[in-house]
Amino acid sequence: MKLLTHNMLTSHVKGVTKGYPLLIKATEVKVNQLDFNPQFVSRMIPKLEWGALVQAAEDLGYRQDLPGELIADYEQNEEFLKKVHRVLLEVEVMEGCLKCPESGREFPITKGIPNMLLNEDDA
Amino acid sequence: MVEPSCSGSSVRFFCTAGNGMETFLTEEVKKKLLAEDVCQIPGKVLFSSSAAIHRVTSLKAAERLFLLLKKDSPLRMPTRCSRAEAASLLQSRLLNRDQWIGAAVTWSRMQRELLATKGLGETGRSQRVGGTEDFAASKKHRSELREPEREEQHGEKPPEKKRMKEDGAEAEIKMESNSFCSKIRLTGDDEASESVENVSFRISCKCSGSVSRSFSSQEVSRMMGAAVSRLLGWKADLKNPLLEVTLHLNDDYCLLGIPLTRLPLANRSYIKTIGLRSTVAWAMASLADIQPGFSVVDPMCGVGTILIEAAQEHQDACFLGVDIDDGQLQRANDNVLFAHLGKSIQLLKASSMGLPLLSGTVDAVVCDLPFGRKFGSNTNMAADLPLILWEMERILCPGGTLVVLLSPQLSCLLKKLLTQEPAGPALEQKAEPQTVAASCLSSSSPPDHQLHSQDRRLAAGLQQRQPPRRSSLKHQATFRVSLGAIDALIQKYVKT
Image (cartoon, rainbow over all chains, first blue to last red; front, top):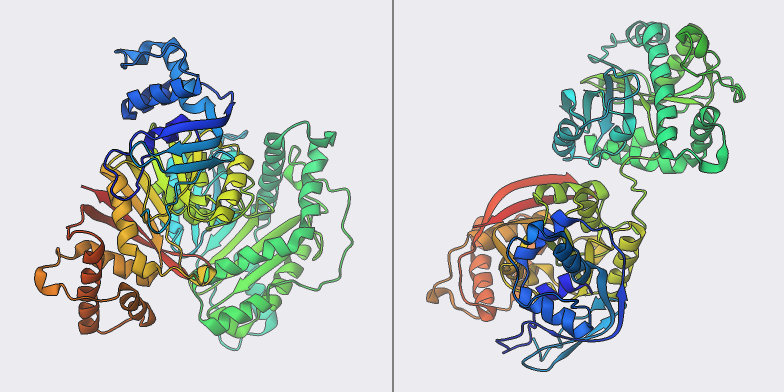
């Protein structure tokens, strides 16, 4: 699971009102070298929940020095975009789990694929 | 944008396409190859392009690619026509020495260009000879070649009986079999007349309509083969020919072509486990209007075919495949890695009826809703459809696109779900959605009043799970496509 995906995920446990963002508990994290595409990263940034991304990166120990608030004019800032590229696309949680911040329900991540399936009684 | 081929001149091609795929292919050749004189006939698209051959072989909506040798108006055999008369008619209409030699030379040049782009250092064999050998050796893969041809015939929708007959008569002529001439001088660099001697060939003919009432495909192949041998001095070789010439005769046209690739273009080299037909998956992705930076979700991704076709075409978007089944996800994961698309496609295990995604965050949703024999499933799609649809609509952002593939029955149900008014209190009768759905599916064309009552009960069933609402999805287009044995519908919606 890349942090790009994590940024889209929310808890859908029944009755939960604040299920976002999910907490990450990682036991295995992999970093893949990927081609840096500044246009792609700049286009993704406005769609992100910035705070959730920075928090997730922090939890995994890959925050670098990314600011808590999104900076202005990031399109021109290649160094910044490279950092975002790294946390968004290169860092990947292979094993671990995602935890619903409200209910505490845990969703396992196995071989990089989160299992967000709920039991009958959770849904 | 489009690189010209070595010669720079425009070449006329045709592609076969599955039933319903012709319009997608027409758009594709215009857009990617800047094709001219594009002509669409059932099951085929003819076009001229000067694009490099490797661009032409990268077409996604096509089944097979041919060099066009000749297209002509239909052959009208006089009634009670003798074999000799028929043979002479075929010869005068379809055999033109310069045209055939020109086509053979062009074909040969394209084979070399294809081989050159395929990778120069491959096993160090000589390119020029390798090209011809490669093609010739490939003829051993006849079984692979035949299957798609059959599908094409389905695409043309001949009556059931005739279809069977044609399949059986997949024209192969038993002429005096010349052993394969190992030294083929078909270089194309020299004078054309010199370079295409000793070509071994085979004519594969498909006849339908009035011609087929006088002569079988086999007979026509034999007559043509004999005439070609006489006129050009080429040698017929049924087993291992250098050149295969296909001839389609029907009431609408005569079409002569030479296949340019041994495997159909629809066989994707980058897909390991095949799910949905790749051409249809590509067509769905093309309808989703994917732009750079888009996030695209397939809530029932299976082995990931649609996402792979989409990600191949759109490097600057991110894709999320969701499925409930571990086996499917595993195969999807293998497919993603095999296609080297791990950077753009992510996978997630979840139910399409409860997506763990924020509302209004997704730019496009693509989905092949499981139906038909393959999924003689425990889940009842018709009963689940309202909730699945609700989820897809919820995650889409305003202006986002939904492209779904479904059976005609589900398609009709979907349309009704989306056009119905929010159910009033008068309709709030209890009903089991399961039984409603079952009865809707079992009768393929129920009378109107019956449908209406089903609708009301379905609406009531819907209410048990979610508040009444009016859908924000606006219908854009519907396309009927063939999946081989069955037809399915692609529907496109935009969230308003």
